[in-house]
Amino acid sequence: MATSVKTAISMQEELFKEVNRLAGELNVSRSKLFVMAVQDYIKKNESQNLLSQINKAFSDLPDSDEIKVHSKMHQKQARNLEREAW
Image 1 (cartoon, rainbow, N blue to C red):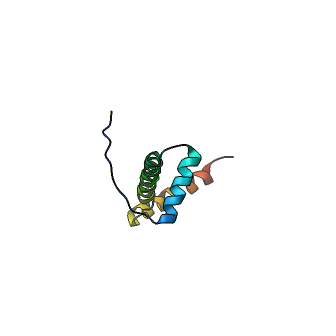
Image 2 (cartoon, rainbow, N blue to C red):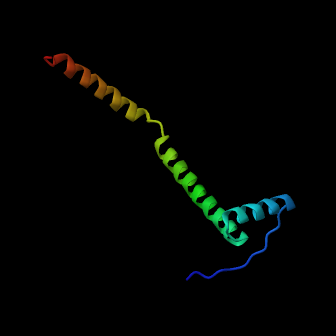
Image 3 (tube, helix red, strand yellow):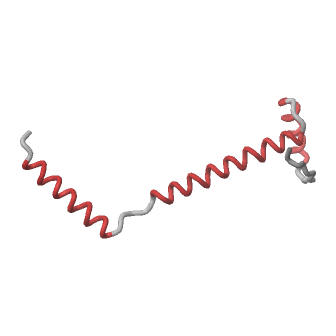
């Protein structure tokens, strides 16, 4: 079983009231509500980081060599299609 630790946080009184209201509405303790909120935030942050890594991996533009190869492949394919009997 994981070890629990206590912590103290400061917040504006209005936010504290909202926390109490939501905890009551969800029928959970304030501590449980904070844990749920932090877990959700961590998951969203991890998802955002993963999405950023994926976007970075696919965002690289082709270099000049890749452009030349693509152009030659396109030309060769066009020639092959011209000779093809449809």
